Image (cartoon, rainbow, N blue to C red; front, side, top):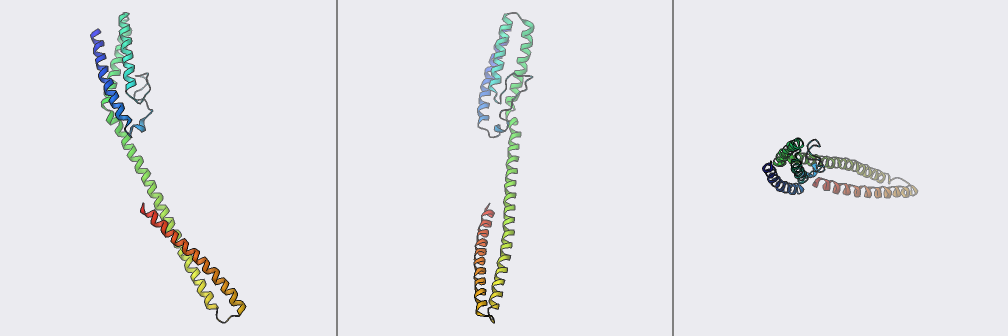
Length: 200
């Protein structure tokens, strides 16, 4: 039985080394952030709660030390059940460490899907924004056309009217020209905004 315990210790040293390497890799993996703070193993198999492998290996090491103490105290029934649990834990750790890539593959796909959705949403927002700007520009062009027509109509009225009426008409034309100026500024601004939004 002592040789079996030594064998377990040797396996755990290898697993510990592998666990620390994998934990280090996962630390630098973007996809690990998605599964971070989730336990790797269920509570039925481990008392440890962690998204890192090393703490689980530490738990098995601790249980192996307990196994040695149980054997020394000749508590064979307890030692046997403890050994079965250690074997299950080692098997689970090996499988999980070897399939770490697959464990992170699904979150990687999820990350790609999240980014794609964000991009689509941003693109739709830009398209919507561009559509709204074009609509506003068309409305402003229509407003400009009506102002030009009103100015031309006032200028045609300028003949055959009294001096008092001419003064009033001139003031109206001046006010319309000011509105037309503001309208054309708005058109320029909208055209710049459209060009900017369509650069995306």
